[in-house]
Image (cartoon, rainbow, N blue to C red; front, side):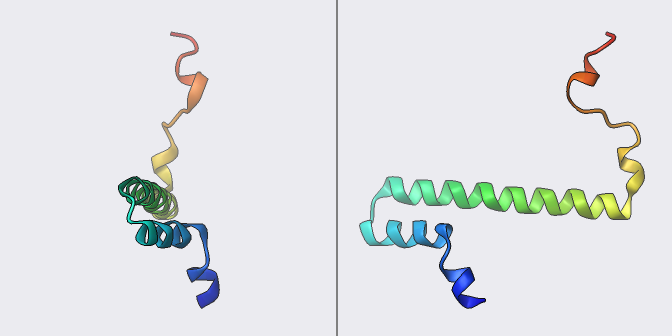
Length: 70
């Protein structure tokens, strides 16, 4: 498990940024990491609310169905 957690592309990106000391590499690593964290927290929030409050989806419409008929 430790090998799986420490040998992925996010950690490799941070290791490369630390070795090269390139500001652009740090910026890219920070950007990719923050997008990943935003996705994880957002998806977790949606799934948790879907389980605890399933009525939140009653009046939700997505995509083209919102604009049809208006």
